[in-house]
Image (cartoon, rainbow, N blue to C red; front, side, top):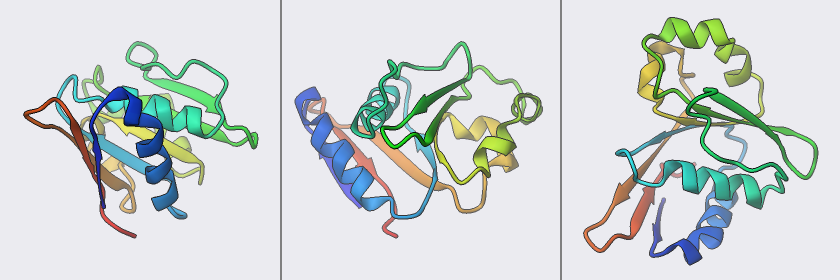
Length: 139
């Protein structure tokens, strides 16, 4: 699956398309360069799910938890500051990753083998014209 996001105005539609494609999958590992728009896209996904909280980057807290409109939790991780997978273990990341609830991860490479085997890799690429392309395997 590939979604092109031409501008910030296109974010709501792109997030809705993403949500329509996730099926029963719950753990999404977002990859992309610094500034590619991972946090911005994840914030819009949270908004689409009815999360009332401001869905900013959890860079300093590592994890932000939001509640969707249906009351289910959404876990947003930013592992950028981690020095080792052990730090993720110390946070209890495995409990969240295997909870069956939606987990959206930035910088997943920082947690090594803690990433569940069924995690879905989502790549966000910045195009020459400033648009973004989101790539995710089909179900």
